[in-house]
Length: 193
Image (cartoon, rainbow, N blue to C red):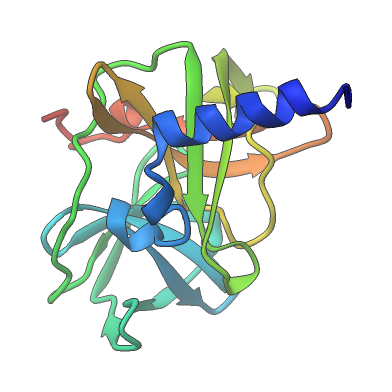
């Protein structure tokens, strides 16, 4: 028997438990959209009608792309102090919006976004909290092992809590050892619901 087969079967079962098979190529089902900025392309997560979150490092952002090809103008960008997150005002943006998590649960997660401008959902494990950034300027972050790529910044880190999916973090970056996300509870003014 092929030694990789049990791992492949586990990955397929894990994917089915976190993200329904018919939604694995449709990040908009989770309120995740592609955004265009002066720095290139990133992702954003709708948290309520007309409001989305993204990574602050994505730079000046101007357009949110809907799955049907329409473009919505981003009216304002409010950087969140102390974390790599920004709140976007996007008139005309409807939800689906996932409930915002009250806490991060160690275990399975899904990273949802648009690396390279293509929709992608990747699976991983939330490993715990840590700090990222230069000494004296570091910020608290969720550490996970879902493999990230350029363009997925600002996308959603989703966890399963009981029978519901929750938005637990905003994807912010990666290095050779781990991937990082801003815990939504650390974004000022965003209340778990």
